[in-house]
Image 1 (cartoon, helix red, strand yellow):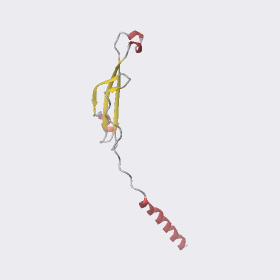
Image 2 (cartoon, helix red, strand yellow):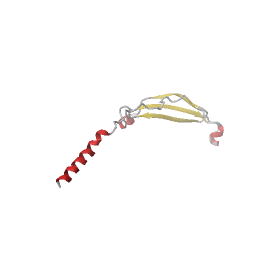
Image 3 (cartoon, helix red, strand yellow):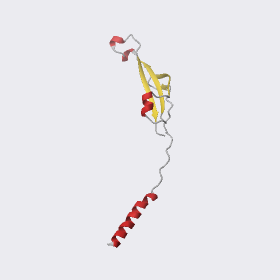
Image 4 (cartoon, helix red, strand yellow):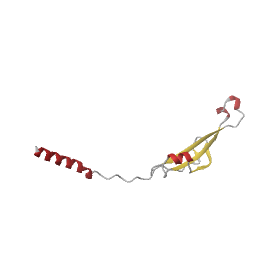
Length: 106
């Protein structure tokens, strides 16, 4: 009986001490994503009048981590008359595309 208890303790000690043989976690690398959004989207007609900045709203800052980075840009594209509804064909309508990249958790 004592012999079985001793064997069980040796097996438990060997099993629990094997945690020291595990490899260490690698360091976190920088994002491979290029955060600089282009001024013009090729072949689509979308152009950007300017950068919207790198600041998030107060709600975003409260919900996300302190090291979070924001990259935003607004794009615009004028619609040709063939893309406009028939009633508004004489107006110059503009589509807007608000884009953003959020990097969090460095």
